[in-house]
Image 1 (cartoon, rainbow, N blue to C red):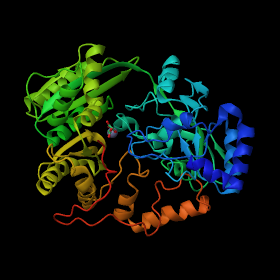
Image 2: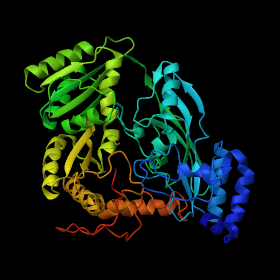
Image 3: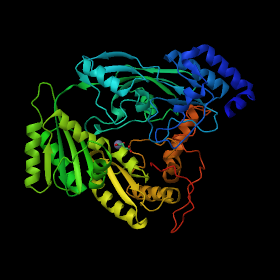
Image 4: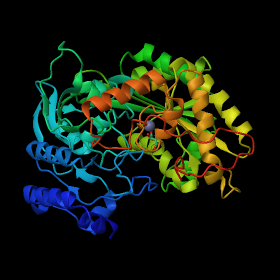
Length: 505
Ligand code: MLT
Ligand code: ZN
């Protein structure tokens, strides 16, 4: 209702909407509140936005026109793919000043080539659809994550997504070989050719990757494919500490070469939460272990299965006291069951109760020590809170989540922002990052403003101003405005924090 009143009082916006509606037709333009509603709330259901209309272009030419018209009218656009951002990066602000730009109709795989090991995908292609298309030509796209059934290529590029194969294949940055994007003035940056060498100056393609739609709209990309997996071997391992886990990773890398592509660390707390909350899950090992690791090793079609090499290396690790126990999946079903435990951690945490969530990285070699020391510091400083840190140890990235004490219903409102600042200060003290793979979006904006290096923030603001002088590209995300207010400093007994935005519960 407020939106309608706003538009009636704003003839230029009304005029823009009429032009867009005529250009895009009923499939590409809607103002129906029921159609808009699911796309106006973020995946974690903490941010609720508003928009006067949702635009769903069918092709790059339509995106060009949308951006030109919006630039002329100075009306902001919020691009959105599968709406699976962990940091509310695709949710418009609540004032309804922006239009939602859904890329989901642009879901064509323009070409796919086994010989060239590449696929040219439009921004709205869903990740699991690309996986299937690649498999159909004997290849694979080596990036996967929990939201693969809804996350889109454009969103994965705009957030420089990671996932569980970064160890071997890198993040989205290393998988995008060419890019097509509409810049904020409506010009088309078309650079889809997969050039291995290209020294024409600033790398605009890389600038757009991880920009969260603040520098333009990614419309298509040329993505690197790799040979399909011939065989895989998945193991679940029990061990005593993150330090032992990192030792195991190095041992496996030496023993199996490049075969290890996933190495995920799971603490006993997360393992037990999954068994408690997720129906049909069973412990992979008989005994209790303080820490667990899920390893996946793969081999290409023509090569022997990695199982033997993995088994030998695990046996040596057992004899040397690096690990306490291990089970290698004896079937695909068992391998999937192991993965299900790992992939259900976030869901189990959600069911268990509220937590302050963090997505941090530090130097890989320093991560085991950091995890232990930071957990002790957090639990000492916030009595009753429990750290549940899990994830991509081999990338130096863990989700360092802090579960609220069970008996403190207002803990999240009163303590979560302070817990987050405390955790981030520890991370910054060792030269780490407060966002390893989820991005900044809206959720991490004030923390980036608080702890971000002034030189980095200054450069980001300058780039943003230069490319998007009218600030129409996904405003309020990623780039903290100069002078953004920092949250209250951490003081003993300070319960004045007002926001529960760090609450993943
Ligand atoms: C994961 O690795 O499972 C996700 O990135 C973590 C999350 O849901 O926070
Ligand atoms: Zn993750």
